[in-house]
Image 1 (cartoon, rainbow, N blue to C red):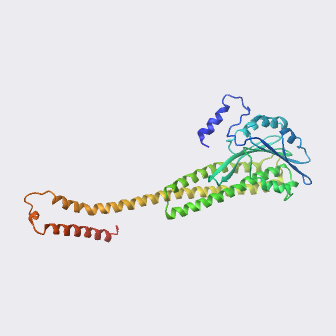
Image 2 (image 1 turned 180 degrees about the horizontal axis):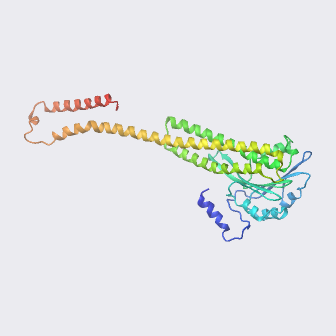
Image 3 (image 1 turned 90 degrees about the vertical axis):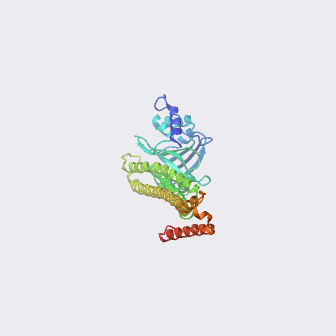
Length: 356
């Protein structure tokens, strides 16, 4: 999304009081869907609910409740969540502002985490992005997505089949699972970008075309966008690890530290890809420059050969009356002999100097 488009959408809030709920971003879902997952170590329930009040009734101390909302254009629904759970209007405003920088904000009864979920669209060969906002409470997690479909299905499978420790843990572990799923998908995305970079390197080493530099520029822009999304995430995970909030238990710090390491690995790969693409662009320009130099060298050699020949032809093309060679019987054959010998001598000279 261009900076101008972001500013244009953000300008919709100009003049409105702070905390006014306005959806800023593209409407990516046709209708809002509310998914509910409620569980503890002995029980599990998953359903799609019709209204937010129905899902909020499941929140209690004996279970962990995960409410997932697909679609952010219904500001009335978001407002109901805030009024029922005591979430500040400025927090809800951040949820609806879909061009947020990844961040974490600690409050007394809940924690807000904003980050970007990235995935690779194979049909158009580009990175797609949407904002994910996560509100972590004492016994619940609410995730807000711009459109339907996400990278959380493996996490849902673990909850359904009671795999690992997620059903035995609290809401903080569920929030960690969401973060872990998003960051793990970055590696899938980077793998696909790496394949594209490998194909571009092969194309550069054989016969680069005009489209090659366009592909390099396109990939470079995607890597820059990815870097902007990942760099702030490092601080988000670090803040989760350092936080003194009671909502994140101490035994989760080991998992958050591992998540932080994954984030650093993603950043390292992104930086490597950025350097590779910059080098590939320089290599392409260098190859084009060398190719142009080769063409200019050949043209210069031809010009150098024909300059003395043109000089000779110019002299004898003046037709002065008293030029002795004009009346000579062998003048025409001698002219061609001189021309050919001069050309051969110059070719031999160029080869000796290794200019050819």
